[in-house]
Image (cartoon, helix red, strand yellow):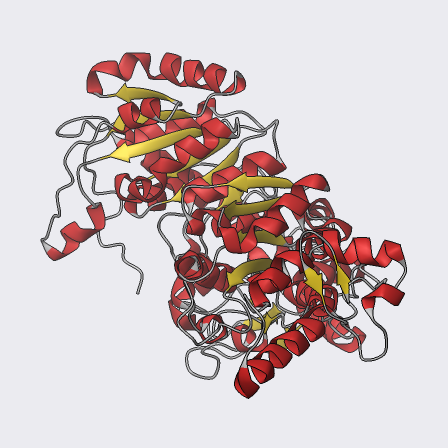
Length: 605
């Protein structure tokens, strides 16, 4: 036994007393902790940010990450931390990482993790947990966390010894990115993260064990501690494991080349999966332009073709789908967004490509049936399809007719934007002004219901990976986290959050986060006192006219109120807000808007 002034260490291997070990190992065991192993793996996997709401269970991870140059970004709510990690995953092509404390810290993330699952974002959620010996015994914040996250995550694990930290993390990070990307969860009991001497002090009996039961208990605790740290600091490979990405076969690609080459009115519906690695967004854009097929862009693929591409069709989708003789569902799913497949032309040839087999065939043989169904990566498929059709030209009148329909619809929308509302500003006119004034490098974050639904028709992302919305889950409250992640990934870009007045309430406190971390963004908030879509049921829940701009000021940002009396100064106020953003301020534009019939009858179920 070795005795010093701080603790007593019993022999911790079957064969050697600690006095026989090299002095350097004694020092490592005394000073190192599991949080360092976590940080080293994250660093070697290219992780630059860890989003968190700090808690004692996970403090060693955060301290170690910061020492290795990984930026720790603390938020005002755990859901925001996960939303921010989700945004980083989408924009950077790496795994987004959030770390939260045990119990309520983890339960606060459930909605955000489910959103990441449905949006197919590779995300690692790190959770604290009660000590291994105290789980199930009424410890602080101790619940069955794995059961909570197994339905939401591709992989869940609880680390039971320090030596398991590295292999478990490497496996989880590879699974998050392989196949259909998605969230993974690892819980770290507190005794796997803190140094040996801290854990040993908690495990050791306070006095000399008495009686047979006391000696048995001391023996059991000693052996548990031995196993907990055995092999902890052995050298291990911490580099990334291979990521598996499913690919279409050569025969499948050739079959699609033949089908597409015979089409007279082909149409592409591009979904978020097109933005996933390994294919770059720029290469996908070039492939689409080479194909020359008109495209509807949805989710993260908005902006893929730039602001004003002749191939990008934005309006009259239902009519175009009925007229098309070939349809390529490139990462697009036949769920509520396509009326479960009912809007598709049954006479059309349909090529469906998706990494996920369930999504690939959702509602098939009920309302639609694919001619060719390929479980594979969308981006890689588009590049191979473009190569196979090199030199092929489609009839020019088809995309021209669709684009003419776009112009007619957008002209009508412009006319509706000029209509006077009963009070306040016309929301369509507000959106048109914003679209004209936002910079070319802007990233748009959509967080809301009716107002954001209108924004999707009017705001035009300037390029690939410049639009963020929650995805199929339709979650309100993503705005603060998405904007935080986006600004950290693209510090030189303007980040615009288009909020509804209901959704802003979820994350307005994150103005404090923006201020503390010097993250500047512009929030354009509709304030219509209520939620428009509820009017379809003759019900209106009133929200009092909230001075959100004052709230922003209180959190260290800058707020502006814009009403009808400020209409002539709208452009000047927005440009002032943009200047304030460039100076490092987070700015909120509290825009009072009136009611229009632009989206009457619109509802998604």
